[in-house]
Image (cartoon, rainbow, N blue to C red; front, side, top):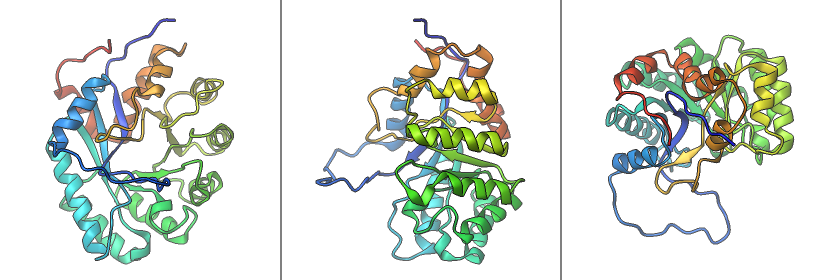
Length: 288
């Protein structure tokens, strides 16, 4: 079985912060203090990734409400600025803070922080994707030219696929990227149905359930312009030993042009400034 190479590998789905999945016996282990950017670079190098988009972990504590959200957005902007390999940075707003306050924060995200999009993981933010406030905030984001990254994790009924159909139907001009959509076998069939009915939803490849090669099936039916390579990673600690979805894609029989779309070209269409930044990095590297 051959394994191809691509010009660039850009991961659209890297979280900055800590993940707590609420598993029984889960504990925060004491660990040595390491430079987060250097640690992130080491992860990118280990897996042959050129660059990534960064976004906050959305389980941050917010006892002071919007103040904490502003701090998170400030932090992700500063993190983005620390490395040219962080091609885009997404901030967040909390639906339960109300649309008016969220709109003010989105203005600040654009004007002061130059953030590139908005991300929600609604199961951690107190609402369902179908909540009226999410609808309002998608409109607010679209009005400011911000793509909306919204998690569709298979284990959460707060992020169910039918809710994304409702978003796509009611916000045809918004750029909606569904994260983690391929994360279970049955859900993959819902993703196929969504893609068939709504061409304004894009999907990342994170946590893809590989049985029956669903990404190849998706590309055969819908093309590759609606897929972005993503792994749903936390750099410290790294979420996986091997980025399995990368190996699946590179070992696939997809046309080389489809692979280039998935690994970086679609990303550059979502974030037009990323293409120039990507070209400014070192000469393209092949994955070995």
